[in-house]
Image (tube, rainbow, N blue to C red; front, side, top):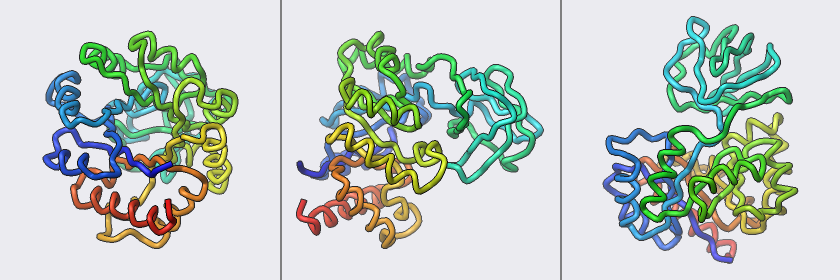
Length: 298
């Protein structure tokens, strides 16, 4: 099985054609939290013209910040109303910032303290508590994209935080012929992956949120093994060659991480926002992936 890469594309970047022409690129991902100056359909139509599958990354039940907040002086408004036993812990910045949630009012989190910084729109929030219940699944933005896709006869979708077949069915209500990549990002998602074996769509181990949700860092090892075991064609995403966002060459740790992912059996990678915002970093990442895969004889 040959190695291929899905790249995240900033919708207004001037270098998209150069990136999609790279021989490893099998498709492009549009992160739907990126701001647009046009309607979704207009942007999707432009991306279609590059001739590669456009994977529209819907946020689903993923909790994200809506509107800026500076706790503890303002409540943090998130994308879904939730129910959870309080006090509980909320994680921001891929688990680097931790705050205590003392109360919940619908989709507002009231924090005892911190993070002591501006929390911006679009940031993800992780609440790892067995009592957590998230109301609803697809957001209004998700539905707007699905409507636009239907009008353009586009079918390729990624869905965040998939935890059941019902999540997939929600997408199919709006886009019946959807080809869905199911992003596994939670413990419940791992259980679902084990049970479904990718029968409702290809699986993706989305390491950013999954790393936080597994609770202890070393548990990422079994999580990544579990996803590729459930679906041998599974994709791995997030935190791949992220050192390129700050350095001209990848670190030794990033090279080793890439080789380890290949050793587990992953052959499709998705590059995230951090290294896809600049032409030089995304092209360097693609060449690094090609060099490592060649070195391993893949």
